[in-house]
Each structure stands twice: as C-alpha cells, then as structure tokens.
Image (cartoon, rainbow, N blue to C red; front, side, top):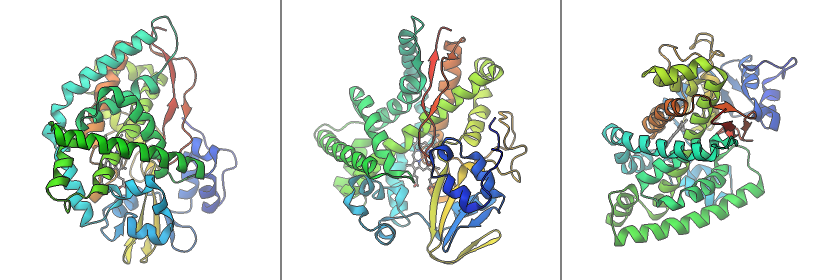
Length: 414
Ligand code: HEM
C-alpha cells in the first residue's frame, strides 16, 4: 500500500502542479488526497474545476451539458492542433465527438460490441491466451526473466482487437508499438518531440489503413474493417473518410494499452498477495470481483475531461458555461463516501461500481471485452505458472492519463 508523504502539498494548486512532475506521475494517489482535502470539486483558477468525488464525477459524466472537446472546441482552445495528424485522427472519432455526431459514430462501431458478439469471442480469447502462455513458457524455460507486459499483458489485447478488426497476425506487434507512440498525443502532458513522433506514426498508420481498406474492398471479409469500409462507401454521411480512420485508430488504441495495464496490475497485485493468486487458480468466480477491484484500485484511465457548453451544476458547485473540468476517475474510485476503506484492495468488496470505464454517453464501448480478457487471462496465467515470481520491481510508464506498468520482469519457473 502506498503511504502519504510526510509533508504533502498544502494547497490544491500545489498538488495539481505536482501531478505534472515525474514523481507525481509515479504515485499520484497522495496528490489526489491533497486535492480532496480542499473539497470534492475544487476550483483552480478562473474557469477550471478539478473533480475528485465519486458522485460528482458520475454526475459530470452523465450531464449532457458537459461536452467532450471536439474539433470546434479545439479550434478555440488549442489553435494549431490541426497541424498534427495524430490529433486530427482522434478528433474524428466518437471519443472526441458530441451528439449528434457522437451518436452516429458510436452506432456504426457499436454493432461489433453487442453482448452476444463479445460472448462469442470467449473461445478466441482462451485460445490466444494459451498460445501466449506457451510462448512465455518457452522464453522462460531456462530460468531467464520474461517481461510480463511485453510478452503477455500487451500482446493479448492487441491480438483480440486485431482479430475483431481483421488485421493480419504478422502485423500485430508493429501495431502495438505504433499505437503506443500515437497514444502519447492523448495524454495531458505532451512534449513537442513525442507529438512529432506520434504524428509520424499516425501518417504511417493512415497509409497502412488506407491500403487495408482497399484490400477489403476487393476481397470483403466478415470483420470490422470490412463493415466500416462498406458503411463509408455506401453513405459517406454516415461515416466520412477521416471518421473511418479515426474509428480504426480509437478502437486500436483505446482498447489495447488500457487492457494491457489492467492485466499487468492484476498480475502485480496477485504476486504481492499469494492468497489472491491461489484464489484465482482455485475459485471459478473469483476473477470477476478481482478484476472489478483492480479496475477500482488501479484504473488504467486516471482522468478525463469535459467543458460546459451551457450553465450547469454539480453537487456543491455551480458550473458556468465555458468551465473546463478535469474529472479524476482514479480519485473518485477512492472516495471514502462511496467505498468503505477505499485505500484497501478488497476483491470481495460488494456493490463495487468504479468509474474506471466512465459513465453516461461515452461509457467505454469495449468494457465487456476488457473485463472478459482480464477474467480469462489472470486465472490462466497463475494456473499455468504456479511459481510465477517477480525478478525485479515493475517500472511504471511515465504517463498520467493512461497509466500502468511499462515493464515487469518475471520468472515463470522460479
Ligand atoms: C481496462 C480497459 C479499458 C479501460 C479502463 C477503458 C476506459 C475508458 C474510459 C474511461 C472511457 C470514457 C472516456 C470519457 O468518457 O471521456 C472509454 C471510452 C471508450 N473506450 Fe475504453 N477502456 C478500456 C478498454 C477498451 C476496449 C477493449 C475498447 C475497444 C476495443 C475500448 C474502446 C473504447 C471506445 C471506442 C470509447 C469511446 C466511447 C464513446 O466515446 O462513446 N475501450 N474507455
């Protein structure tokens, strides 16, 4: 469990500023509590609210007067953003759209995420999990350390989403690395060099997608890329060219790093607590509550944002039109008014409904898929390698918005 530093920041402004530092990003939880000490919604300068309460974040996510930043909004808030192809791609997706565009874009991709379609993926996920565990067993057979993130946690989600989209298997590791480079552009802390790398990767991906779309036009398949290409070709008003690219990008990036971090944290917490590892192996239903508690305790997405398109209010705070809101989901998940003993990891927690997948109109489209992958992957990992052990402490990626383990060396035959 993490401990509060002896002398934390005294003001919410200091805590907020510390979140922009490497140390703050490594362990932001004490900083969230330092902000919470000043209220559940905290005003940081004119027109800016930081929200750390559960009820307040939930209400904000469901409030239709609070919008996501879309292209029109970026034109006023971040002039010059259109020069960056990585930012352009994301803003053409549902994640950065408001109704009516949002509704249209979500409907087009939503067909692939219905509960029966996700249930049908179970056997695919099980098979992919076994293949990756075989590979790990081979890599670690001679007692060498294997990176759990690179070889397992990040490979499974990219294999699953690639199968859904219809991406060739041999290109998956390339996608993973490109998507990782591009995803930096969605993080709150951007540096110019990282953004330039993201743009170059985006240009390569766009060319790749355009080529793949051409191939699916000539030889259609029963996959999501064919469906999206057909939708665009039949009626570009339902899905424009940039929107097609944006949808492919967001499905690839929104789904893989996040799920990889979920599996990585799940493995880490079970290695710290052998009784949880044992229950993952032995109790058929344990993984459901376990995964939900990882989502609450170490959410892969720490923060999202909204802005007020009209006057509205949250409990205890007026929100005038134009206000920018930072919603810290990871802090809401540790709100003591909603969760008993919130800093304790408890997989048997009842009525555990963290905000890790958001809420309201933008509620994560891939939530059932991510849950299913982790619920399959974690019990199989510990069943296959009963003596799994860390060989070195894991390293966190230096990111805040989407946060998780970068590397985690383990021995599979310890
Ligand atoms: C543990 C894994 C995941 C986490 C923690 C996560 C988290 C989130 C969150 C918090 C949002 C809402 C953002 C907001 O309201 O501003 C979101 C949206 C979204 N997620 Fe996920 N996600 C995960 C996995 C996935 C997967 C596997 C996919 C698809 C393959 C996916 C696709 C999406 C899409 C398309 C949206 C946008 C929905 C919309 O704007 O209507 N996510 N996700």
